[in-house]
Image 1: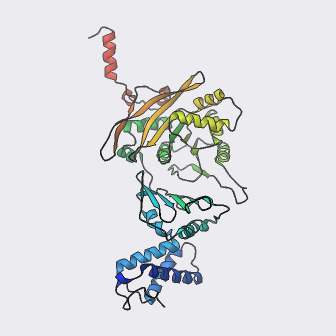
Image 2 (image 1 turned 180 degrees about the vertical axis):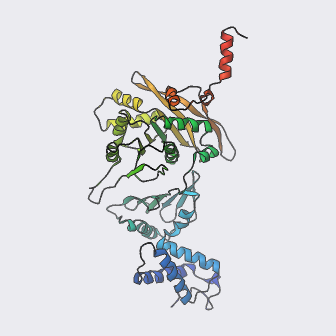
Image 3 (image 1 turned 45 degrees about the horizontal axis):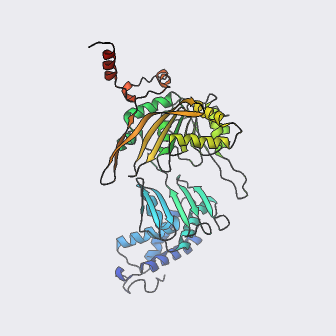
Length: 447
């Protein structure tokens, strides 16, 4: 077997003089030819490729130090059976999102912060080949006539790709990784995203079958919190989950998971979130959990909430509780001829609580507001803040110091929590019992 000319010194020992790229391309090209004649069974491709790569290397005159050889082998296998230069980023558990903006600009998100890496592709054609590597096993394709694609990988990772002519600066890939470990409420408390008393309050709300909406921007932790809230649903209830890509990890036994279906190439065969909500209502659910409301399904969900399907959980992409209401109004009005007041009445009678999340400037994700929909004054929905985040300061290293505190207002649905067996202490809502008693004595003339 011939090694590439000039790849190594004649003795093959001096790795410093090696043309690393030529050696790598030689191994890739030879391995591709070998794999074409030895079709590995499904699930055995990586193992077969590694075996052949070892054989190719053994038969060549290459004699590299072990560290260099292992690095080279990994890069070759990543190129052929992985995702090329970005495979190490996908293997890194601290990275949540990988973003490729053309061949020379690769970014990652860690702990809520985006940073640029030193990883590069050879050129834009190399990025295109990697996109094909990602989508072809799933029977998908991308081309200039269909320059965008959204898919979910077998491990749950969500991939979006866009190529020229739509992507002006070269093909782009965004991969949002699917966390293998589900965060627990104790971990959120430890991270400072939530307090013990608020966790107890939210547990009571779920068990008492209140309808909850989790709101926040992209990457604020909506799905993480929804997962935790769903854990509070009693084991003996039938749960229907609806998602456009599966991310929820419910632990209960009686769960039916539904997922949307994108259109075929002829635009037929679409199954939307709204289609699944309508189907879920015919499946005798105790609870309906919709990972995100973003369209016409809001009308069906609100109607269900108003017609006996209590205890529903969902998320909405919005920047504040008031923005949630505006978003829902827009979603519902697009599918009905109801006047604005009638839509607002459905919203306020269907939704009990909005939990607002945010990703702060230091990258941390926190609950910043919990508001009750307390009724209507004229044509306006009344929002009552039960808990509110108060920022104290920003440290020199950029850390945001603050905490979410009760506002001192008890929600109107407190009696529903008590009926469900939760008698939360007045202090949970910031009510100082000792001070109230003291004030009572003073007003009555007692000392």
